[in-house]
Image (cartoon, rainbow, N blue to C red; front, side, top):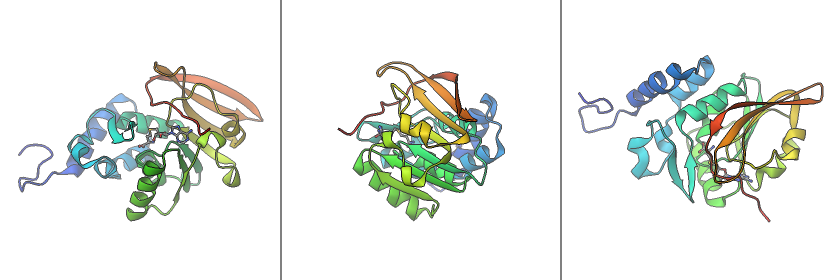
Length: 220
Ligand code: SAH
């Protein structure tokens, strides 16, 4: 039988997901058990447009409309693992997009707050996450530059759009001992995925790898 097909004309997404975890994640250094478990569980194909579903478990980003993309599975797993996603954590995501990264986080941590600047994407993600039963995710439409001050501080912050600078409000809203990942660098180029940590009020940054991300835009 062809992998990914049940023989009944249906697509076996669970089998495709398993292969994705084995071949794209475990072999490339994704070791965190909770991250691997969440990646094995979240139905990524439901977060992409119908005509992309067959590619949902491929090793690449995919278009989600409005000129935006859902990140490659490896990147979602890598960023999740990088914030050390323990179960009691409160996480802020900037760039909801399809809602997939938020769902992966929601499988692991206590609560996820996520902000999307494009209303159509934010509303669609909100509905999908609700339909899938992710009650610990709150979606807000707006400019994530300002973070979510009413809910701060956060144990971890994941920015999934490529920024030219680190938004100050996000650094302020990060808890002491917290971790933030953000793709940083000029628009239309390769950026650095940065890990920012805060300890005793001191900020440290470390470059993790070269990445490509859609730009972080501003409401003005
Ligand atoms: N995490 C998403 C991938 C999102 S792509 C997923 O799992 O599907 C990046 C997203 O960031 C896009 O949807 C884009 O519209 C959004 N974005 C860009 N600038 C933003 C900003 N200032 N505030 C909030 N969202 C922003």
